[in-house]
Amino acid sequence: MAYLNIGDQAPGFTGTDQNGNQISLKDFKGNKIILYFYPKANTPGCTAESCNLRDNYDDLTGKGFKIIGVSADSVEKQKKFADKYDLPFPLIADEEREILKAYGAWGMKKLYGREYEGILRTTYVIDENGRIEKVFKKVKTKDHASQILEAMK
Image (tube, rainbow, N blue to C red; front, side, top):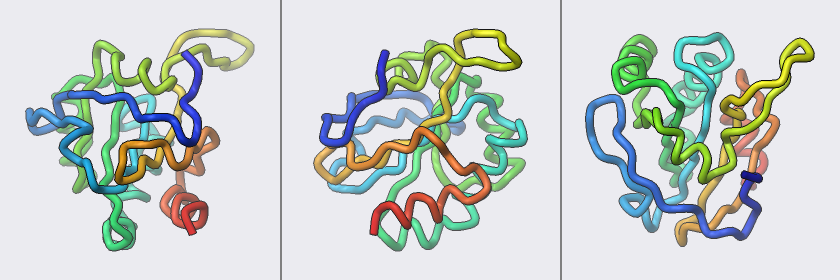
């Protein structure tokens, strides 16, 4: 599936977060959402990205953003990741890859000349009406919050 585009309606979803809570897109209606897809909890790039969002959490929430992370890791792995790095936002365990596929964040990747299917590191900013406002296909893992805030000025 291809990436969603600016102006597209964000696909609805429901998933289980690291604390066993059901999280649905509709729960966030009326809020701006940073929905970020990351390949694997506790890996260097994903840790840098998540911790950067954590470290800038007050700035982001102060601008009205809610943050939701999604990967194909299990609830238990998401819980360990969130606890280890004190992440203050929900991390959805999308083991069936339904949300990933709906947002075009699952597809062919290349590494060392080998092609395989996997999670494409992607972030969407969704507006208060559930429309895609911004798409980040080239995420700066160590400076993602600034990348988002700069683009949303």
